[in-house]
Image 1 (cartoon, rainbow, N blue to C red):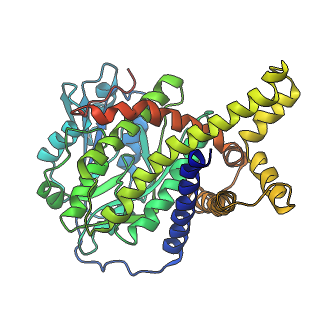
Image 2 (cartoon, rainbow, N blue to C red):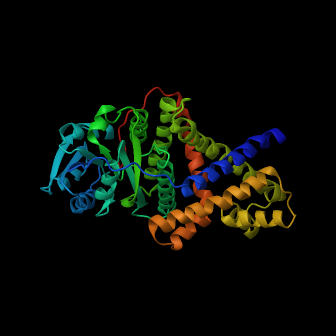
Image 3 (tube, rainbow, N blue to C red):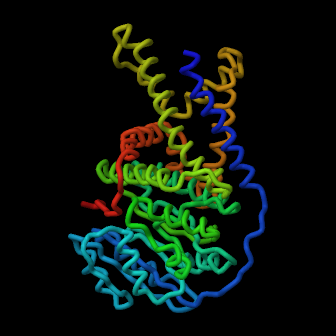
Amino acid sequence: MASFEFLPTTITVVFLLVVVSYYVLLFVKLKKPKFHKHFSSISVIIPAHNEERYIRECIRSVINADFDGTKEIIVVDDGSKDHTADIASEFKEVLLIRKKHTGKSDSLNQAIAVSKGELIAIVDGDSFVHKDALVETSKEVERKKVAAAACIVRVKNRKHFICIWLDLEQLYNSLIRRIFSKLNANIVTPGPLSVYRKKELLEVGGFSTKGFSEDIDVTIRLIRKGYKIGFSSKAIAETNMPYDAKGFLRQRTRLARGIIDIFKKHLRLNKAIIDIYTLPLFLFNYAQAVIMGSFTVYQIATGYFQYFVAKGIYFNWLVLKFFFEWLSVVGFVKWTISIMLGQTPLTLVSAAGILSTLLTYPLYIYAILKYSRKFDLLHLIALFFMSPYWLLIMFIYIISLPEYFRKDQHNIWKKNE
């Protein structure tokens, strides 16, 4: 049993160190690169596959978005079977490209090839940009050696059940990208809105058509070329997330399989900060979800069988209370109090677990208050019941593991089909 518990103990201690590193980066003050060049033209590319539900609002938000210069809007209809192209053709401000269903990366590359802007902005067809988002994100790439920039991402349809956790996740990820950008350690330029210098984007060969995580892949290639990735805390994009079981699982397995492909392509020992911090951390987070999630499920299952099934009890209010405590923050609070009162022994893993959890929750709350600018009941529910969501992500990570043994990933959407 001691050897079985060694791995969770190690992971918990490492996670504590990781969380501490977040605080160090959050509070450290580093100067951003100086403004170097003003860009007077931007091409906003909206790749879309079966996005009739959201494409009209997406295009309108881009049309209404401010930009100090010439703004070109290109919608690429990637073989949609719905009315996406018809809706896009209603807008005289839009250059519409219709093509066979060859995937997002190929759609982006075709649009970049005909684009006229010095800057390239990517906005997913299911997303919505705020009025000042293009201006604020573009300011970041005007800084010296900054070839791309990310922004704050929020979930627009967060009132749907699963989306309350997706929104919390996006706000938290935005905070992590911000603090990582201080060291040029951010490797994610998210689909809802990212801005690139066109020249530098073409210099690294544009977007790869092999691999699902084309945004991470191109960002890593830009960093390896010596460029920096900026982050704007003033630019906001909102995205509509899939909320039915099929759409959610399809999106999350694609993300999980994509990050596995990124490990295969880019994980290496090198002196760059992304090689000694970011990519190992992504790998650790994946392993942590699989191992700690499995360990948690094991503890829940053994407890249920030991305390209830063995006694012929399958369901009553005590069983409900048992699962409620495991799947909510109540269990952590009770466990912490029992350790403080001496009822449960204090061990290295329990100390690290308590400290890492106590330090993690303020980061989530800080991200909510800073980027959502409000704290409501949905945020509270998401924070209170985080465990079920992360156990679901653990399950998706596990079923995605066979991706490591596949030779290639082809960047073709199966979204909304």
